[in-house]
Each structure stands twice: as C-alpha cells, then as structure tokens.
Image 1: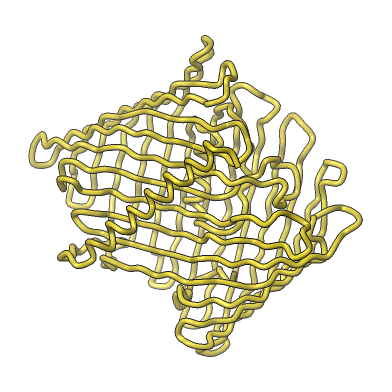
Image 2: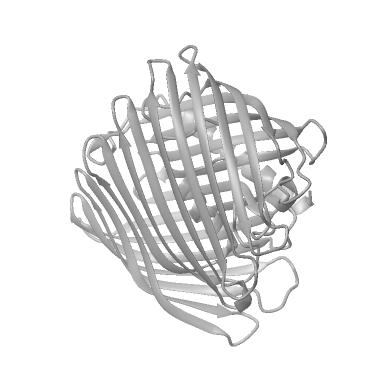
Length: 458
C-alpha cells in the first residue's frame, strides 16, 4: 500500500470520525422539523451492527477451467447515521469489513464501502462547511472477473466552505470553494481537484427554488503524465421543487473541458435530473438522468450514491482520461405488509476524450422480491444482469447472477442468514468467462433491516 493512499485513508478516517463525533455531540440540541416527501424525518438516528460469516465457493478464483473450491470468512461493521438540524446536516452510511481466505487463495483484505456527508452550520444560513468522503472498491481491469487480484480500494475526499449573502427576502448569493483528493490503492491515477462556484438562488414559493450557477475546477494528477490535467467549466440554470409526494432537482446548461497541456477543448450540454415520486403509500419511483464531463473518480462516487454502500466492486474503468458520461437510471420499490419487491435499470455511456478505444456502454438490471413467512422469518429472491460493451476493443461481457436467501430473526437485534447464489459470466476474451456457485452463512447483531426493506441479506 503506497504512502499517499495510506495518508488519504488516515485523513478520511479522521474526517468521518469528526463528522460522527460532532453529530452525536449535538444530539441534545432542540430539534427542527425537516421533512422528505411530505413526511417528517427523524431528526437524529444512529444504528450500528456487526456481521460475521463464512462464504463457500466452488470456483473461488473465477476461472473458465480448472476451478478450485475455497472458503473465506467475512466480518463487517454496519453503520448508519442521520442528523438534521440548523447546526449540522449529516448522513453517514458504512459497510466496511475484512475478508480472510483460509487456504491463502488470495491475500486477506479490507472490503466494503463508506459514504459520508456533513454540512456544518458555522453561522447558520450564512457560513457553512461541507465535508464528503467516499470509500470503496473498483476494478483494475473492468473486462476481467472480479477477484481480490483485480480490484483495489479507492478513496474520494471533498471539503470546502459555502458563503450565503441575502439580496432580499427571497433571493440570496451563494459562493463556495471545494478541494478534493482522490487516491487509488495501486493504480497511478491519484489526483487533486480545486474549484469553486457562484450562484444566485431565488425562492419561487415555500417549496421551490430557482438558481443561476457558474462553476469551475482544475484537476491535476500526481503522476508526471502529459496531457491529462484539465479545467472544467459549467454554467447552468437550476430548479428544485418539493411537493407532498414528489421531489424534483433539475440542472441544465453548458459545460466545457480544456486540457492544460494542449489546445484540446470540448464542450456541450450539461444536464442533471433527479425525480422521486411516492406513487402510493406502499410504492415509490425514482428517475435520474444526466450528461456531463466526468472521470473515473466521479463515476465511482456517482454509482455509490445511486446503488448505496456495499461490499461489492464497481466496474469503473481505471484511467486518467476525462470523458463524457451520459446516464439514465430508473428504480421502483413496493413495500407491503408482508411482501415487497424492487426493480431497477441503469444505462451508462462513456465517450473518452483521449483514448477513443476506451469508449464503452454499460447496462445494469436488477430485481428482488421478498416474503415474510412469519414475524421472525423471511425468504428473498434476487437477480442481476450486467452488460458491458467496449466499442473499439475486444472485451464485451454479460454477467448474470441469481440468489435465494433466508433469514431468521432470533431476537430484536440478532439474526441468522443463509444465501445461495449462482453467477454466470460470458466474455469475448479467452478465459474471461466463468460459472460460480457460492453459499453464505452468517450472523448479524444490531443494525436490523427495517421491516419491509428490500435486499440486504448479507
């Protein structure tokens, strides 16, 4: 592990510890009454749990031939924290664990993810300080089967101030600055990003805000590689609306990307849209779509925000080249008294500025359904399909997986879980496909799934 990456992890751990500590220290303050979707939010919540268990696989190296059985243990800490007040808005979600391979097929390692955000109201309504950290795993080779040898840890840390100046009863000026540090465990793509923005916000009503925004940032890589540093500029109009059952956030405008070591410049449409709709008391629908200039770090953070933290690996293409990222996701969830289901689809299209042979299209489809057999037992069926199409080089693959899970709630905080899964991967590359059957037997203490929550047996 390189010193730069280790230093980044230490800084991020201190930031998250300070975030949680400050949040918990304010737990005794008088609460405000924030809402989401017209429903009151819990002003303060903290849940922590422990997870441990054994995984067995009939193809632990995920090879096309000469499959080997293997067993490894997994222990994890699960944490969620929410705090909403005038002095602090914080959200921390973590699923961080350790995998130990009994027969030394791979080196044991830290796995999982963390997504933490905090806005400190130094002077509420006038001066705030923003902190965000994302930790997880990405592939070192997106066209190879994911194993501990083809994945690495990545950490993305961002911080900076926001200053607000009232220009009237319904209008205010917003000025902010941001510093980001992105570190990879092995890949030579560590970089820093410094930027800022200015915007004018106007309240159209008690539940809607329009804005005019200008932003710029500079990205500089640590490695001495020519023609990789770049500036990114954005000008946009924004609109946020919150109704009793619908929340919409729209940003549309113009963006430009300029390479610092050459005259290469690209520009085009900037679009970001998120829409959440509570269809009925038991069902909800979510839509996101966008077009923006991005890089591997930004895609890692975006995908984690869309899918949540987990002990899975994101198939992000490791590269220092920026690219145009066009994406659309749709998610539906239905939660009944004893049954529920969820389904989602996501489409990503990446068009690279420098390496044209890296262009690719990805499609993700997932679905789950559960049934509570009794007050203490639950069965769940999950399915997932991932397609990756590399436009100019061999490497296309299709990976399909299905799992059947059973959980028994032995007490209010203690549960036992069994999950059986099959993964089938077909690839254009010789030896790139594999079939794997695996089973998981685990115990969880604390951090119990909310009644009706879909997914998450492991």
